[in-house]
Length: 385
Ligand code: FAD
Image (cartoon, rainbow, N blue to C red; front, side, top):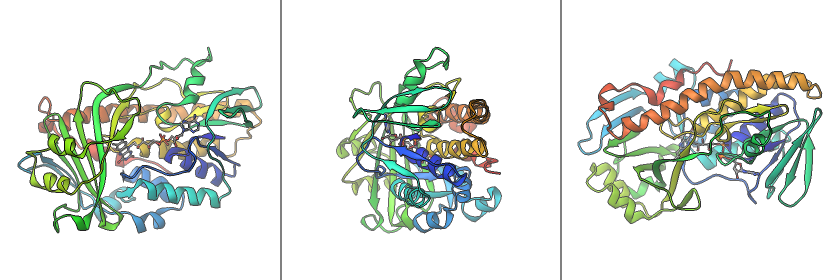
């Protein structure tokens, strides 16, 4: 049983089904889908998606950027230019692609359904109990289900993690996610609404004091995705994302390079996210219950690795469970320990690197002068074998 039908939950469902397990996904929303925004899928994530047989479908709806670039927010001077495209693909044996989140979600969902994954929508999990043989979950409606294992892929406000913490034997250094002092506006714009050739076919970060702005193409170049990050002292909104004020966004980036301001001139809708994160947990599993994705390692999106890490988690978890007889508690526990040992050091490192990139992108302490290739450093992944 998997709680959460986001990108991490769907990848886990698909990876486990391919290993021969019967999988059910419980999702609190009434329908499955994703927000209208883009994702940079680095080669480490693309290796997993390729191993899941999805490369050709993804290529049809994605955009292959030519370079990863960091530019000065006013002059446009390049601080960094890393060639992507074919060279990157042959170097890392997987492409670097830009995808609309809804497209990736749709492809994963269709494939999971085709492989026999069962979906329970409008099913908010509020509680679980486990013994030596099985795990039972209770929905908000009072309905219950049971299965051999429970995977919490339920995002940064994970109910599964909250429940795990109540067990005395689950010591994981847990502290609630905190507001990182950063907010992100996100939006997409049809390319034909922009002056011809305005946006270069690159993944571009415009670095400025206390702010940065990201642009890249989606859907074969028909759409441009933007992410605009600003430092703020607090996040007062109850929800973690909300409709953003386009005029406020334009004013926050007025005086920036004309590529940014001309792009924003065409924006008529945006959403605003408060960016939350937490220090790495020391433990991700207890007996038959395990976590993946944002549920155990939420991070700032400044390395474009949150979904990529969830995708890697899903693949490694399924690999470690491959051939395990789920009735055997000891074997399950050993597989989950192997999974955590592989994943925790890597995701903790990426959490720290993502945090460090805030200084780089916001021109703090001369970080741009000491530029390292953090943005694509993780593409040297060894996954999957
Ligand atoms: P989620 O996507 O949060 O999914 C959790 C699911 O669980 C949801 O569907 C939710 O409804 C469901 N759920 C929650 N609680 C319950 C419950 N109790 N019962 C049932 N269902 C429940 N990552 C990248 O790799 N590349 C990028 O370019 C990138 N850009 C980003 C830009 C921004 C501005 C932000 C904010 C993030 C970005 N990320 C990026 C990070 C990425 O979005 C997340 O890390 C990723 O979506 C996490 O996936 P997940 O499946 O773990 O969690």
